Length: 433
Image (tube, rainbow, N blue to C red; front, side):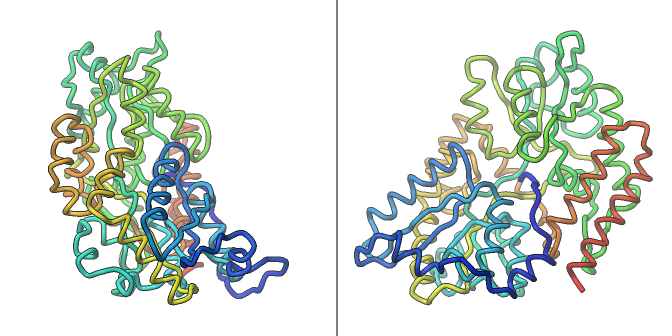
């Protein structure tokens, strides 16, 4: 889960009420670009990149080869945030896809516009009941199932096992914040340019710090709920580790910062990093000849806690009934036990269904590579991310202010949090009038 700029909800609402000129409709595109072969043609917008995009394209090709009635045209739209921005414009232009991925915090925003279909109408009850309960809390809106899990994740603590053992540390990793600070200090070697912990400053990880204290980000009244001792304690944890030189604030914005932190870990310049479980397959592959990687729960404060992340599949309300039914057939295919297992093994994302999780293949994988199982085990302590409309924009404003506090270590954490949460509340209020 990585935050990039997304156009404001206010602008989105304006887009939804406008008819843009110079745009062909989805149906026109099908006539011009599609291949008519007697199948229902549906457009699927993908928001994965790199190797994971290639893996997903393989599933689409397999679906198309075996389906007698449906042809899926997968269109890449960049990352989650680019996809969300383009989707808002496409809805306004009446040129939206039939099915798309949406990052979990985007679900409520699009659902509030009435643009998402009730997926329950287009998949079997058996399929719906098979999804892991811990992943479905972010798939509903107004008591309707308007999404299903596709590529879902939790953040993990990645640990250089060899480096820990050399420092006399338990390679299973720190269990709490105090141990995290000890690990980071002992793994830091300033002479060799090694930092104990590399963390991309992202709302996902800050949410975790609040959850680990039993707090919440936004309450049921859409009020910022962490401008208190919990919020200050979380920000001061980062700030104090920065002051000690045991934590690194990676260069770059958005995805670039995530990649910088990941590269520091892979290249042995960071003893630990926080990354999504979606990075697991790639990290294991890139480090296998240099050192052993362990994964662990995010360290606890008073309790364990982690947000879930990744994206869900949604069917667009503006599609025809025939297209919605076809989209449902594709969801059934992607939710098949064997396909869920393969997608999880190939990418590192969690298996999204009970049947896949309980399968012999997954059990064997977890036995051979226990690093994969940590994300699933951590679901026991996973909490729903805020679903308030405008949260993506609000959280970005929040993190922009927090970064200032972490770059200028003379700034008081409490004052920074007061300013940051005030700005965040203004954005939420604007989008929920």
